[in-house]
Length: 419
Image (cartoon, rainbow, N blue to C red; front, side, top):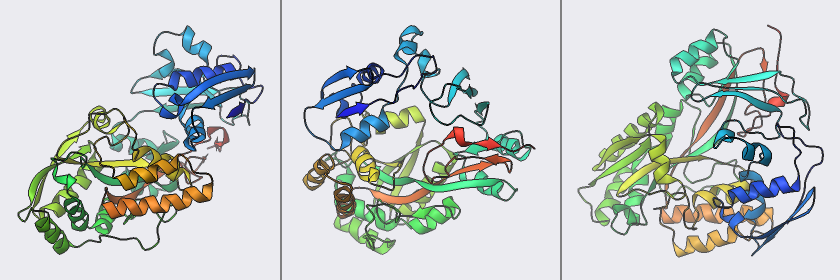
């Protein structure tokens, strides 16, 4: 795989982007990314050409390297105090960091040597406001221009106050469990099927999503290349749920734990799940944990969890990236992957191996449909809904935030009218 580096690109510290700089960044990430670990050699051919030789072919190599590896100035990183570059990254974007205060603000200014279209704005300041009520008041008063990834309730409230919005269905939510643990109740497929039948997902999505979420019957939305038309294996049916629990050996239900990342929205979701499960005699205790503990269980290299369900979710890509990134990452059969205690059948492992050898986009789309069907057949998880990502902004603001129906922001395209 040969990369031709764009000439004339500057880092924020004034140094030049070269093949050697790209190689240095790939080497720093080689510990964390399996696809880079599979690189046999990295050869700098000249200042603007880098050749990577892999031990074996994988369709994931290109997308992993270009999507998951940020490129920073090696000079800036190596000449700065330890961890300084974590908050003062010298990259190649249209704005450069000038000041950071953890938990408070990030200040950036226009980078005049940016290689692309020059930004309209002189500076951007991102402030952290932890109280949604305070943030809402800030927007209503006009003291802030844009608020993104805000809680849904506040977004809906602000929509009625003359502010503009960009919105897209940007995330998937599902229930995961420790099905790889043979002693877990979730190792029993009938238990997993029962829980899916016990949940009224359309009603829950309407209650929590306020009309902006899309309930799912499979782990793919209709805009996704992997969507399987008509696939709805386990619609809401409490009677069927009780029957499956009896067949599984739990006629009187059982006690369990539902782990959630602590937020008001997740607490509401968990309470609804708890209520529906109670109706089929499953007593679910809600365990709220902070972000560090949550990802310490869920993320690659995590500890996992035991005898419990976990409310999981992730952003997703509607194109073939859904197969290569979403299914390829979050349902990986590789060691030290996401959802480390989720069971993977031999059939799933065989499908997953094909992700790495996809010869074409068409093959990846077809494979994605088969994989989504397999997830449903195995009751591997319970798909819940697609969540909305919303940006709310003032009438005088013109922003690209979420405009492309993706988690992308091109701040160099944003501009503000006189007001």
